[in-house]
Image (cartoon, rainbow, N blue to C red; front, side, top):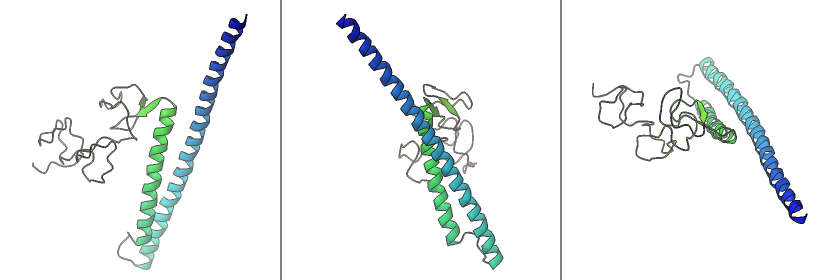
Length: 178
């Protein structure tokens, strides 16, 4: 009888742990989704601030629209968009999903190819549209701040004919060799 009760106790304990884990994940997902929405609101308010600053510069007769106050807003927007990307990746992981490395569509975590654009997926895809860079830093997404992301060749032929080794070429720029 004690063995039976021990087994029942272990089973109930295991089930309770699973329920606690699922509850914890649901709370984390809710918090992350709320954080994303709040960051999107902050970003949108900064967009409005940019509009006001640019228009103010115009009204004052300043020849350039990119004054220091606008550049500060640009930098804040970049930081918030980075935070949003990280939180979206976290939310996708909590849902057992990931983002396509090329087009950013949400996929099942085990997807080997994107059902939308056909791109081969790495086992752990990064933020939406975070295709590996061609600069040689081999980070995904690229963090070297090179302007060669995602491909260093500079052409837009498919397949790539400039010799960069990317097939299909995904850099999105004109081929300078043409």
